[in-house]
Image (cartoon, rainbow, N blue to C red):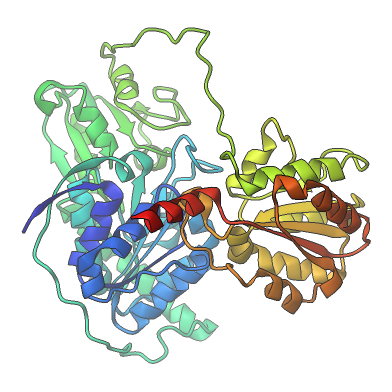
Length: 532
């Protein structure tokens, strides 16, 4: 089989395609987006007719993947770490139902919050659900783990989580492909009640999950992805998880570490290997990209006063990404530092694109809000979140997908009238529709501005599930027709936009303003493609 130069995200996708996957489900979210996009662009996936359309949100993606598994096919669902929160209900319950066809949940965590609200470590949720977890250290392992993940999933009839982080997802390396595995035939569960989580059935399914824990632990102890690597200097033993193993090796000539190392790529953590390391070495250093997941666990393993170093004792920073320099400092090695950045060089803050429709919306909103004062505009997750920065300074919140509408409602309930919500078209269908129904049911005095640029623009311009449907959705939910206003956000329409916003802000009830203009980036891309 051929060797490919792949991103870590792409290696996961190729491994799933070659591993017999029949469907992939996802909602775009950096750093996980490229997994699904790779499948969408793959000729092999197209020839195999692998399902690869975007879902409305992570919860629907998780449920659809579980449905494909129910039908006996292998499926993958992909998301970033905060997306797993959205999918948490079906995710945790899928551990109880178990699976029929192999099911892999791939989560791309974002340490240092390059494009996220938090640094959440998905290994905790995998442990919470009590399912096997894989964490690749390089692109080849990412490829191999998808294939192995399907095998483990079907062997124990359990979902499996694969966790990667930003640097692995977005870095390239050579990946050796392996032979293609045929897709499963359609087959329904042997137990017709397996997926019915009525309490009496769920209790029995839960016992199956608990009984499987010893099997997961045994698999982890014998896994090819978990290794004990000998070292001459036993003053220190190192536990390196996932990509942290690469960061460790970068600090040693010929990539040979002088200390004994337990490399972890599959969880539950291999206790026997770690016990051996603890017995042979004076102190332990835990290297992991994310939370102190293993470090906390080991402090529970060894209640004997042994020194365990890592993020909890300050040997490594408690927040942010791990990197080779931080590992070198933890090992007491010399590090190379570049010249200091001159004070004249200032970081350039992110800004909305020139010609972006969000700019026109915020210009109009700022003028319309003058008589009401500041700090009453709730926003959401998307390009338009940049409205919090100069020169607009228009919005006052960004918490999670869909929170703009419900936070505005809560503020209105508290007496902050009018309250304003700004939300994008894709975020609206992802998590905003239910909030709008709450507002409609109570006729709350909230003005909702849906900035409809017909794309999931922040993650690369994927197709929005809402295109052409938003007005009808709002009317169907019960917003009064005269208070569903559609605008074209352009500088020449500024005065008209301000007038409409002022009218709806003065209305003591629910109003929705839909500002429709295509994302300037997707529009420009289409123009380029049409010229070819």
